[in-house]
Image: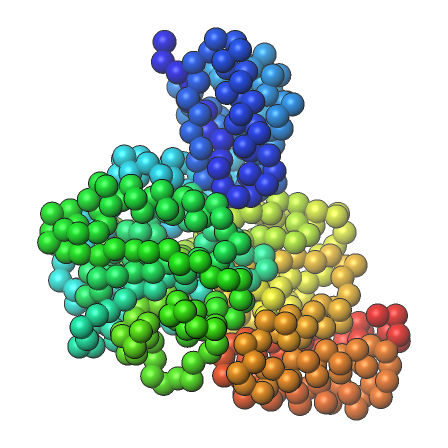
Length: 515
């Protein structure tokens, strides 16, 4: 009799909720009962409120149980869960779960499905098909396909990836680099981590395709040090890819050479900005570079460099495999393809939702997020990390795409969405944005370094009722100076949450000295 196959996630979010202990207890119970069980440590499906989520392979598909605690495991065995028997934690066929079945998983199609460090499983699920196509395609045509797909950078700026790649391709240089920015520092974001821990070969494949497209021979993944699980998975996956001939010397017998090294960042938020990341990669303090020259012309070690984030590069294999037009057919307006949206904060069902651009914020928050976890009315959401604008309920019908959100004064950024119910104090949230900038500023430019510190002081005076009208005018002037005078997006975007809070929730700034 063959062993029953049980999937238990190994990613950081599931591990934080006890997945390792659950896997160990399943193994112990199986041995004690003389039952053959093979435990596969997969990535998370992204239904974080149901973690640890255990899946069992049955003749009718993978059946899920969750959230499973170690103490639940004996009861699952007693009920016969290995055969798919019913239990109070039963969730049914996982692919039919309402949270999953209406998603459009392209970049995350394999996450939670496969063993993330098994080359064989990756290949069995269409892995490296994009790379095979790229090896049959000229560099110029690879870049054209990515350009025609409409893929824009998923890290925040939304710059067309193909244009960046074309610039690097056109440079004549003895060395070119692919730099993956995996310093995912925005609050409420976890898509990069989830992808790296659940399907690292896809990132490796995307970076290798980029290298073939622009003529690079070396890549770096700049990984935030707070992601030890990602580091372990990437290290395993890189070694496995080299061993199988998909990375390193003579890739797939083609004569092409490309390798990837993981570098750990020291935890500076500013290194999410591409030039600061390059400074850190070169061994210097993470500090913004003055542009021009652009990194695509003079980047890492002074050489032409493609800088994209994890989700951007991980989107590339599907584009090469299925074609530019198939990707373009997803989305709306100038926002093509899909985006992994991350739901966090005060929501009943936090997690990851991958959908084509064009759904509404209300649909995301209620159809997927289930409304507030507290049961109180939602009052606002912050989109795009700690420097994103606060969006009030009156704007929840806005379309989630780059132009739709820009039309209401918001930015999509990395796709992180943090929800707040009606108990939130928006003046305190605005103050936090300024304090965050003061703490994370690299200090190179005055508007960011000094403006953020003064901004905290001015907000404190406003909420204390000290010369309120005069200080509101000072705060508005300060915000304008930071937007137009800062060297990079840290100082330039810090005013967005402040200005949106002042615009939509002015009453929170006029409550006397209660803050």
